[in-house]
Every structure is written in C-alpha cells, then in structure tokens.
Image (cartoon, rainbow over all chains, first blue to last red; front, side, top):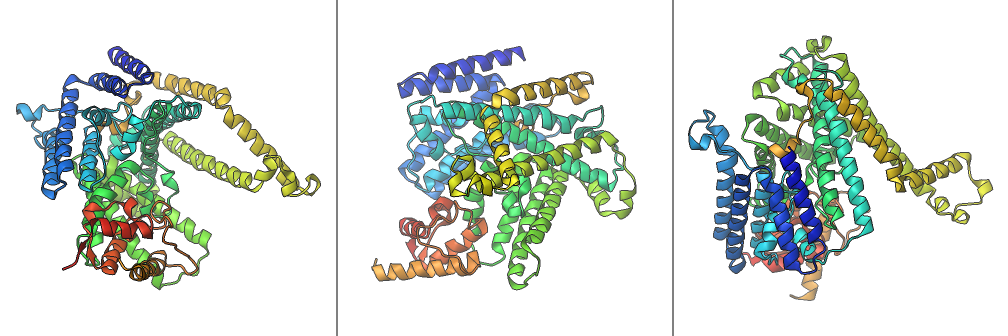
Length: 504
Length: 89
C-alpha cells in the first residue's frame, strides 16, 4: 500500500514537472514516464502488456495510414481481440487453473485501453486525419487518469490537447478540484454506505452474497435498486475524480454519466450511462452493422448483438451476457412501442405519460442489475422468480437497516436533484432581478413575496456555490471520517472496497 | 453536381427527416441544423437516415466509413456521401 502511494506520488510529481516544460517532446516524455510509473505500481508485467499493445496498435495504425483497407483493419482488430482474449477471456475458461494459461492475470484496465487502441484503428480506416507520433500514441494509451478504468478516450479528442502548450487555467483547476471532491464523496460515502450498510450484514453486498436465498419480492427490488445506485455512485464517482484530475492539468476528457436515472426511455438511458463505452459501441459496432442490411428486423437483431457485446465486454460470464441480451431486448421493445405509438393515439397528458415512462424505465433498468450483480445465473433466476411471485411479497429476509439506508439515499438523491431543478428554473425566471436589473421585470413594489424570497435563495445559493470550500470540504471531511469510523468498528466484511470497474 | 439537383435532394432529405424521424408537425429543419449533437436523432434513426441518403444520392455509402458526427447536419450528410460514397451499379 505504502509502495503504491509512493509510486503515485512520484508519478504526480513527474506530471507537475512535465507541465512546466515548453518543449512538447520533453513534456510528452515526462508525462509518459509518469503514466508508466503509475501503471507499473499495479505490476511491472501489466506495464509490459500495455507497452506491447501500444506498439502493436501503432504499427497497425502506420499500415492503415498508408492504405486504409478492410483487410488491414481486420488484422489490427484481430490482434487486439487475440491479446484481450488471452488475458481476459481465456483464463476464466480454463477454470481448473492448471498450466501456464490458468495463471494469467488480466492487466488492470485492459478492456478500456484495448478499446482505445481499436477506436484509433477504426478512425484511421474512416480516413480521419490522425498523425500521432509514437510518444503521443503511447501517452494516449497509458494516460494515467484513465488507464485504470476509463473513460474510454478517442484520439481525435486527446491529440490536440496533448499538442497544445500547457496553460494553468484557474477555472480548470477549480472545476477539477470540485469534481474530485464530488467523486470522493460519491465513492467513499454514498457507494460505501450502500454497499456495506450501517450495521454488519445490512449492506447491498451482504444482501446478495450472504443471504442464502429466500428473498421476498420487496427484498429483491430493494437489492436491485440499491445495487444500481451503489454502482452509479461508485463508477460515476470514479469518473468525476478522473475527469477532475485531468481537468486540473487542462485536459478535458469524455463524460461518462449524465443523470441516467432521470431517463424516460431505455434508449435515452444508454446515452447517459457509461457514455464513453456506449457511444463506442454505437459508433463502431451498431451503426456499421445495422446499415449492412435493409430488412426491417435487422437493426433489432443488431441492437441485441451490440448490447450482448456490451455485456461480454465486462467479463465472459453468463450473467453479463444475460444482462446485455436483456438490455438489447428492452431497446427492441422500446422501438416497437415507439412505432405503435405513432399509430395509436393515447389521450394522456404529457406529465402523466412522462411519469409512467420514467417509472417503467427505472424499474426495468433496476431489475437488470440483478443479472449484473448475481453470483451466477441460478441466483438471478431465484431473485427474479421472487419478483414475479405475488406470495413472495409477504415476507422479508433483509434487516430493516437495509431498507432505511437504501430508501434514504435514493430519496435524498432525487430530492437533491429536484431542489436543484426548481432553483435553476427559479433562477432562470428571476435571472434579471438576480443580476440586479429589476427594471426589466417590474418595480420592487410589483414583485411578489415569493419572487423576492426566490431571489434571496438564489443569491445565497450563488454565494455559497462560489465558496464551495467554506462548507463542502468540511462537510465531506466530517462525513468521510464518520463513515470511516463506522466501517472500522466492524470486521473486514464491510471494509472499503476498491473501485468496481477496475476489475473489468 | 448540378445545383438544382442537389437542392432537390437536400429538400427530399429534409422532408424525410420531418416526416419519418421527427414525426411532429411544425418542426422546421434547415440544412445546417445540428441533428445528432442536439439529440434530435438517435442511433436507430441514424441507420434509417443513412439508408435514405443512399437512395436519395443513388450511391452506396459504406457505413464503416461513417461516424455520427459526419451525419450531424443535412449538409454534412451530403458531404459524407460525396466523400465516401460510390455510384450504385
């Protein structure tokens, strides 16, 4: 642990030094060295695989830059799939663990940077004008904020930023640190709280792993919703941290989440959840495949295929494949529903339709997490059977604490976003008064009490929003210490967990 | 290409987008209006638009060479067809 921290410190120092260099070669060399030092702290063997993959993709890229043929593209894709298969999919298949292959360990973040290498090859095939040097390409593959678990970057976005002369921008630094603080809060406080619970055995993890079957219908709903939020806070928290770290150095990464739990349809959900990967699948898998044939049913087949690949990307486990197929089918049902809706007019008001649509999407997405989290397909089947069996709603095996924690966190999440939305609407409405231009809206005497109160609230919010460090940092520190103390009082069963997506 | 023919094709594409993709009356689409980046068209619509573009331009457009950003506006769609499309046999 201490060794890893030291390596991280060295890598960070190298980065800070690199950012003061004017020569782009010196800067890139130091940035790459920092990234490699950081990555090597997870294992020197892992670094060797990353370097090999970078060299392989760069060489394939050179061939594609000379002549972007389909054969050259498929050779590059095949080599990447082979390398990923060797480290990610083959060892679990040889479950006996005997022999050399059985002892292979997948380098951390391999699925993420392999997909980055692949997107480079696809972009070159599409004749994008990309001319990275070997140094720049290796830096793109190993960029330390993203090397462990994304977001999955694209070279057309990163290359101009690497080449730009470094500038310390006050806005970038403050936004970066705000996002780091938010990310830490989401991971250490919220994800941890949901996963571990307040008391021993009351967390979502224990609900899935330690409860020996017999779940009631409500138990399963609670675990599904709880796990969905745990995963969201964990991965979105991680993404905030990573995007924030890069932002401090003036680099803007792809966003990974955009309020996914407010989606009204499954299609919209997939434009807001793990966006860097879902857009990758859309651009490089769905679109080329779906446009291959003209039959009406073909895009539906491609939906299921693409989402199955999405599931398989996580691991070669039946549960992930089922999760992918399930979401593929949800997308198909949504599309068919959309077609029917055009023919049948439903006389419901927009808010009612919106609410029903949100409820259906939220419930179906939440149920899908059972496949994602279940130990095996058998457990998923038992849990889903409990959901559809009315008699299973009469009993519960989860402790009351589980219900309290999950419900409180979920309600607080929606309440927070609700208040933010109301204040944003109020701010837009009374924006001119807040800016001090009362004449445009009416005189002070004409203004309602509610209007005046809103202006005061919005002004106060702006004041404290601009001074985040006054209140957010101490609040988060106190919360983290409290949660940490609660965790320490218990045994290892609820110790702080690593980021969930670093295992993929 | 003949200017009148291009203008006709652009109008044909816009009519298709209004009728089949947006599906709401009163929505106006111009040739330089962002469609993908604004969220107006999604992945499924993108596939149908690509196929329609092939019909309108009488070209074979390899989907592997097209990115959503190349289809962001009607103008860009035709530029993409010109760049990567091959005349249909």
